[in-house]
Amino acid sequence: MTTTLPPHGSLSRHKHYGCDCNPCHSNYRAYENRRSRLRGYGTWQPLVDVQPVREHLSTLVAAGYTIRSIGAASNTDSGTLQRALYGPNKTLRTDTAKRLLALSASDMQPSEHRTIDATGTRRRLQALVAIGWPFSHIARHTGMHQRPLAELARAQHVTRRTAQRIETAYRQLCRLDPATEGVPGNQITAARRKAARLGWYGLLAWDDNIDAPAAQPDRGTDAHRFTVSQLAATRSADIRHLGRFGIPHREIAARVGVTEAYVRAQLAGYRLPGQSRTRQEAA
Image (cartoon, rainbow, N blue to C red; front, side, top):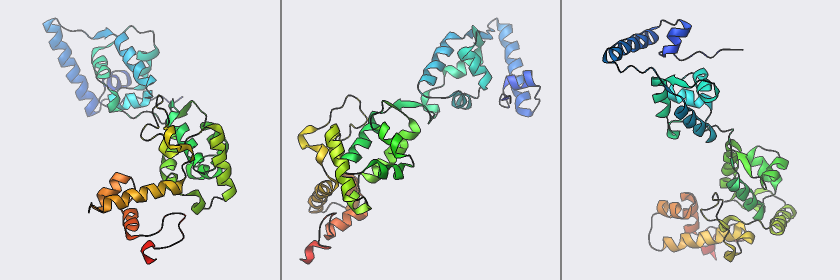
């Protein structure tokens, strides 16, 4: 088994592995000078209780941070962290304890393989099906097989990585009409019927609360049957309304949640998905 050495400049690298590079040697000399000075003052305390550190590390691990990410952020070798977390030791070096207790979640990135609540993932998949996207086509945009994807529409937990992949696909597909993206009409109808049968809600039912487990869908708008064409029509009406006041295209795009090119096209009168004319003013 390969042994992971402590980083250069650490006391452990010099004392236990004999490294005499400049960072290791300088840190060791600084440690010895500090120890001699504190001994002279009678305040030398090389070890402290490990329990507060153990509790702090356990909280970080439970939040999805790995030993590797904690070690990289705190400049602490994995062996020390393993002993602090799971070992029988009752004490820990004072400087190591201070370094680890000062570590916060903002200093690290959570592991993408850590499981999280699947509420947002589940609702996003259900919403896409409700507007006519079958799992077979959603799968192509996520790089996943449709069977596990369908299971995620009912799952309670999901990994961060998978949640991010589905959120990315959701942002792409929720703005598109499956009928104009090559999805056969019978599959669109089947997907919508499946969502209606299972009580799944569409895009507008959740507003900004799609990730909140306690949030309830907006049933008043009949949102589970809201199609992409209807959504596009509503969005276009908002764009035209804001355009009458001379609001810049960029600001309209930010307010409505579309691209600036889409705003220009709508204000110029080009058709929406499902309309037969290519330019409304031409009539």
